[in-house]
Amino acid sequence: MTHHPMLPILLVLGACVYEAPVDDAIIGNGITGSVVFSGPGTPSTTFVTLFRADDPGPPAGTGGPVTFTTVGAASFTGPNQGMEAGAFAFTDVADGEYYVSALMDHDGDFNPFGTAVAGATCGDAVGSHFGDLEALEPVPVEVRGGKLLEGVTVVLGGPLDTERPAFVPPEDFVVSRAKLAASIDAYGEPVLENVQLLPLTAVGLKAAYSRDLVLELAGPCVTDVDCTALAACPCAADAGCATALPVWLVDDDGDGQVDPYPSDLQASQGLLDVWPRVYVEYLGQQVDDPDTGGIAFESELGTFRHRGETLPERWLTEAFPMAAELRGASDQGIPIAFVAGGPIGVPFQAQTLSVTLAPLFRHYHADGRDGLDANGPFDTVDLVDPDTRAKVVPEGTWSVTVIGPSGQTWTVPNELGLLDLPPILDGDRPATQVRGIVFQ
Image (cartoon, rainbow, N blue to C red):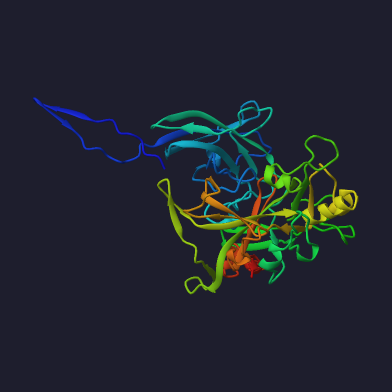
């Protein structure tokens, strides 16, 4: 966090000049603007969030908001040429560049303080501050030196027609670090008997933090095809607002082929641009939590200081939907659509999805030498490298996060299972949300 220089304050007292001592306090910046909503329906409570530009939120990244503010439903001005606007303001914003986003919570189940309830559900409206209303590309704003930035407009889109991708991994799913290290041979080809495939399954949920905060995600979606040998089991054509795993084999150039992954490193390994994005992160050893009666994780990882901030040490990796199956289809000359479960270039919903775990990890710590991003300096740890021991990757429970192209996100384990919430409503089903996957 950057400190702003303080201007010396001169007080003239008779013939004496007094200069105040230098104060390290930060001069806060301000950002004000309006959230614009054009329906359908009437406005609801809206949450406006700031994300650091170098650590954006889903779907562009995995960052969390640095702060938020609320615009009440009654704060919207009323129809004006089919649109309504509600004013927002941020104060004491640190120097930097930020994306400004918003979520209109139509069903009243959003809360920024819990992982499981801090996301947009089906029917909510989401939006951002755009640089171009035709391209609808979010652009960051910049504030520095105690600046007040006014007139920032955030445009909300129509209601989301998909539900959050609530899912579960298989019970007691174990990843072999040794096999993961041997899953690619010296020529870059997969070693099939060592490839680690993680099957994910959409699941419906009903849980309550209190009688006033209920999260009910209907589902999962149903399928009406034989899914044998398919990497994704597609939902029936009209899935409605049922939980499902969002799949999209991207074909932006319209050539009928799945585009290469947008990162050069992954593209060079033959990976294709397939949504959702899936991330796996180390949590620690699972233990009973005497304070909550639920489950917690004890980790040997610590924290480190970087550029004035305290950051957590982290281990994480990205996993890739259908990567093994699409690679096999390509090698055998089989059309990708035959194994993918859905069309190329058109998003579809799936009840189950196969995800290929990768042997490439990032370890964020104080002495990282391979790169630097919003999470701090990191080392890239490639288990396929013969000089790298598989056991360098921590043993224990890892979380799984799925991010859809709409930005809707789900992570397991999450607090629905970890907190051992009492059953307030009939049909509570939070127990599945305590499952992670185990590396050993």
